[in-house]
Image (cartoon, rainbow, N blue to C red; front, top):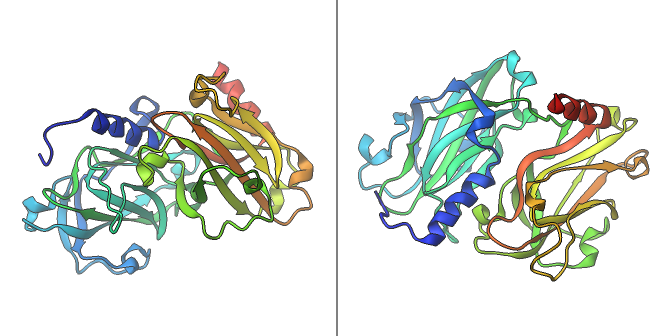
Amino acid sequence: MKRIILHITTIAFLIICIAANGQDDKNLRDYKSLNGQWYFSIGDDEDWARYHYNHFNWEQIRVPSMWEHQGFNGYDGYAWYRKEVKIGQDAEKLSLWLDLGYIDDADEVYLNGELIGQSGQFPPHFKTAYNGRRLYKLPSQYIKYGEQNVLAVRIYDAYGEGGIISGNIRLRAELNPLRPDFSLEGRWKFKTGDKNYYKSVAYNDSNWDKIMVPGAWEAQGYDNYDGMAWYRKTVSLPADLKNERLVILLGKIDDVDEVYINGELIGQTGEINDNFFFEYHEAWRALRGYTIPPHLYQNIQTITIAVRVQDRTQTGGIYQGPVGFITMDKYIEYWNEKRK
């Protein structure tokens, strides 16, 4: 193996990477195996993420297995994997996850041309995530049900073995999922630090970083960061939801949070303060679901969501889904079913 000695910080990072991707095995069942031959090319081209890109002249290599054992011995650098996967109409009622096992070193994953997850960082600010289990949610709005879907995986390997090196590669289905009517999973604007005006609709966040939600921020370039940070996202709500009573789902957040819609505080879990032993020390376990007052989304063109987060130690941020809008009726139905 590339690195034999596991330091305490490495073990902590492994925990972070598992938490970053939102689920554990006991809540998932297998849906479709993806072990076997994938299309593969060394090099790097953003065009290779596209749904319609023709990859049929690429090499084919076995997954999982390091690429050094399949004719690319000594190669360090960028490479891409692509695979077509048919997802049936039966999956429309499921929440699907992509289990990519372990990848050496950093990766970005695309579904039908849309970025759905990442671990580690690419050069020039390279950070490995070779010890992190990859488990990525497939956002329902990007899935082509009853058709072929294209998975594209961009990888950077710094040295030693590279690629999708181990694990049971597959699609998995979540048991009894809480499914938003309008998903907010994907890229959000993100900034460390804390300013009160970050909640304002008029605030210009164009120079903020982008981060995948859900996903711990440590696995996305902010390793060892504990403290304050903000997430922002502006969306247009579908017309069919504007006359519904709505709840915003924000999954699980580590540690405590305040949530603003169009500049107005609508809910919080725990209390943000300077006391290290803050009042609600188990807040990171709580599933966030906040009722949105109708005046904040009815007869309004766009909705600006701002999430203020305080992390004290280890994993930080919106680390687990679901994230999105759901009707109050469906939210109540979910919890009534869960109680049975």
